[in-house]
Length: 92
Image 1 (cartoon, rainbow, N blue to C red):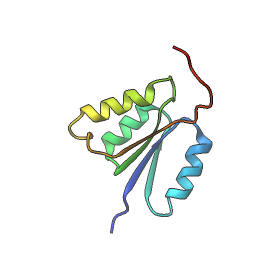
Image 2 (cartoon, helix red, strand yellow):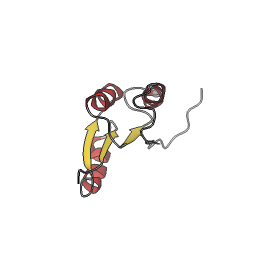
Image 3 (cartoon, one colour):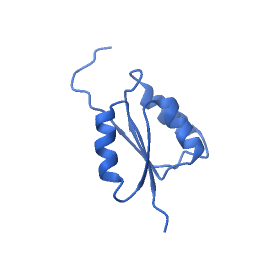
Image 4 (tube, helix red, strand yellow):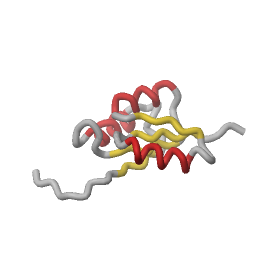
């Protein structure tokens, strides 16, 4: 039986390594360090789940990637977990 695939898209290499180490015991894990890489990985082989950081190269990058995934008929049904490690308040 083929392992389910998880894509972790986050620009924090320590977080990616830690989460990958845990998930790799049960899943095939691929990683991306920014939104562009994430979309390229999804295009190559759509994962069964995407864990997506909200802020990577720029503040809204994760939301932009999520929007592109949700508006594409081929990727709109892939489960998506959005997360962030922000520990401060931003005023707009």
